[in-house]
Amino acid sequence: MSEPHSFATAQIHGGEIPDAAHGSRVTPIHLSAGFAFDDFEQARARFAGEDDGYLYSRYGNPTLAQVERRIAALEGADEAILVGSGQAAVTVALLGLLRAGDHLLAASTVYEGTRGLLTENFSRFGIEVDFVDDPSDLDAWRRGIRPITRALYGEPIANPRTQLLDLAPLADLAHGHGIPLVVDNTLGTPYLLRPIEHGADVVIHSTSKYLTGTGSALGGAIAIASAFDPDYARFTRETIASRLGPVLSPLNAFLLLQGLETLALRVERHSASALELARWLETRPEVASVDYAGLASHPSHVLAERYLPRGAGGVLSFTLRGGEAAAREFVDAVRLVSRMTHLGDVRTMLLHPASTSHARRSAAERAAAGIGPGLLRLAVGLEGVADLRADLELGLRAARPAGSARVVHFPDPSLPVAAVH
Ligand SMILES: *Cc1c(COP(=O)(O)O)cnc(C)c1O
Image (cartoon, rainbow, N blue to C red; front, side, top):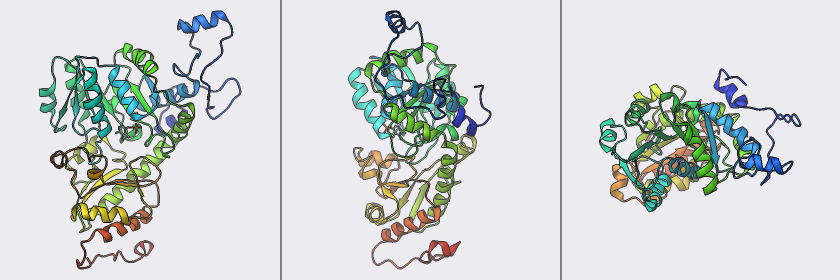
């Protein structure tokens, strides 16, 4: 179909090719390892790439192809490649660009799994990686670029403190050096942010998060801008993804497509609830600070107004005055919120990064990153926000130091939440 006018339409119809065989309105799950050839000649032609039929699901699958076209439409990309997880997407996207002797310059704020991949795995392939300590400092990026640098890499919305990248000048800097800007837009989602419109060349997703949205299936996607080197998409799909083999199951692709069709509705609500909870947490005496780019107090708020007009997403973090002891009490006190390392789910999830995702970093590194012992990450789901506030209230009460005087608020938090509305 022609380019749909709105995101809401594109998430349902973008890139769709109707099922000519049966008229199935929902994309069927082609759960088949391979595809039969009509005859000798068709087998030969398909292996030679002379016809565009399917041959084996590691090289392509009709369910995946439909979802790839949808994601490409949503990101404003020329093409998308699905793989088995977000980590596989980072690996495949970067190995499509880098080989031994090359250098990657990355934001220090990247996802911890990506950091480990870059420092421990890529180093074994002879690929050098440096991190820009302060990714908001364009001069630091400029100084970090070397003759062997092949890409700039970062996350437009960082996790857990939601610092934003200023994408447009970063893309200009990359292009001035003849290299691409590669970003992981997992926290942004194409509903909130379309990095290609700001100059990014390759956009990665852990579709395990918001794009699937139900927490039911891992997956990863790589969306590639039409302006970028046309050989990259083919090389990445055929030589990297198909050979390394991190294939997405057609069942997971189907679950992903079900999620994509409601993405705008969900992310709008995730963002609205996160903003409401962030504002409320900011008023609480137990809380020293709240990190959420949607708040006027956040250092990235000016960038949020420019890059995220539809909302700042569902992830926020907050730091308790009582440090690790308070965080421990808080985490153990909640009843509705799940203690989990996931995000982008319909369910709200709580994590203490210093003792989990960021436990392998030194205390000094965590301090430099602003991930203190009292910091908690909240991945806000789609439950009623009053119910979430009531549950977080349990955490806040538990987090008060023993014997401290009861803090008096108006409205009185001991009232049932419904009564204060
Ligand atoms: C979760 C996540 C990943 C890794 O994705 P998986 O699907 O868990 O492999 C990569 N980047 C970001 C920003 C993530 O949140």
